[in-house]
Length: 175
Image (cartoon, rainbow, N blue to C red; front, side, top):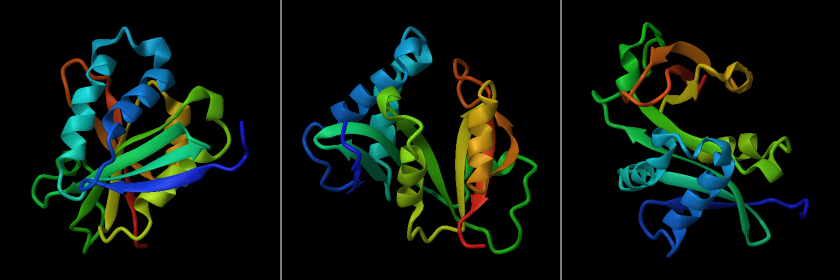
């Protein structure tokens, strides 16, 4: 494994051939122990859903030609910001949100700071006031990690009947 991790940015328009399958393959490796779970088996649907959204962006980390992880998301449409049903009060002027849908790194490359680099590259130069993401409540260390990156827990939601309960995490992008 090389020590240089290359980050590559992608947008909704002009995704390269094989992009979808690359994300699915990284997910299958990252969640290898949980792939018998029906919710995780639906990941291809989530890739299709998010990659069609207006403003979709994705950052993929590569070790040489090998994808090691990725982060992706898209801006939420005003009035359709599902997280605002939580008791969190973001303060005045916070009217737009970028939803971070996925941040994942394959096991072989974890604990090297790659997830933080992916996350920060994804949010770099965003015009929205807030970023929001979900963290499985059974993973408190992941929630603590996001808190160390400036997120606050806004509440909890279960977006799908077969999904885990998630902590809704919100971060101001322009303090």
